[in-house]
Length: 161
Image (cartoon, rainbow, N blue to C red; front, top):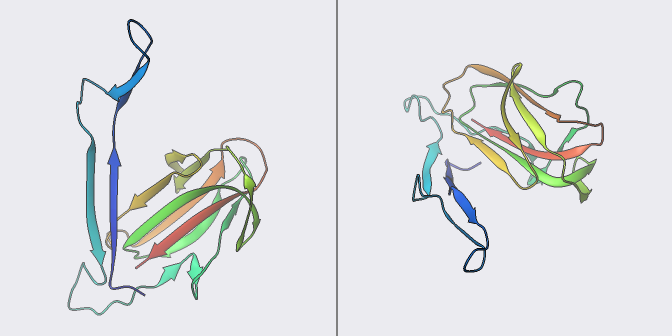
């Protein structure tokens, strides 16, 4: 596995101005007047450099993805207990689940992401969340559930540490 994971995030608040004396237009919202973002890198063994840490991955094996089937809104589908991970990305594929390595047809269903019993975010097709924890959490129980329904949605999950 890699020696480090590089990441970046950004957001831009947008306001839609309706048709008036000109055409409708989207523009950066006046209250912030800029985009906001950041980037970084998470390195192997970042917490204690004297300890040699090999990146172990969850969600991929031998260059092959293992999609998670999120198929119920009644209970949380667990990612399992992940211990001392440095970095996590969870991505909504925008596709229904076919099998662990194959995506199905497009979907618009949203997925709630949980840490324990708390919702930490809701992601829609194509969206992702990045968590650079750098080994700060000994064990974390994460999972996901559909906002409604029982049709399986494919979620791409990658933990490393």
